[in-house]
Length: 197
Image (cartoon, rainbow, N blue to C red; front, side, top):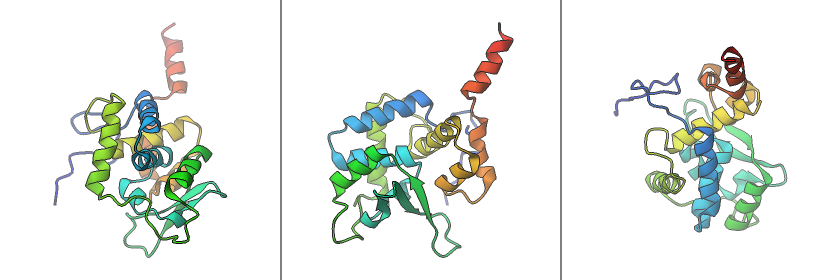
């Protein structure tokens, strides 16, 4: 079993390294993903960025998981192994759903075809390639998990209620989701700015 070198209840590692993509990095990642000429790599990276799913959850997606008319993607929560079968619906933007439909033939009669056939390690490499193209410096933040954390922070800063972020990320406990409240947001910067006048 591999030793865990990160503190689970923090946005920083024990060494003080940031574990999430900052807003500018997340925006550059999305821009680089949209520019990617390989459509499957593009759809994987954008699905991770726009839904905050785990890479293993994305790789488990089938044609039937994408609900274009209802504007959501249904993810099987793979970390809830003690429970039988847990599906969570995560809203997705129309532009992502349209891209998934065009790239993966969502009208296919075989509804159980997986969207991506890559191994977890290959998918991880493809995400890291887009991170490099987005000029995101390497580190523990420049990973699919860092992208997931970046989604959580972006959702909180966008005013999404904590309970919805918890549901979308598939967290069993609110305490896990609450770490995203630790990131300094615009409102907090405005309050601090008043002190410095």
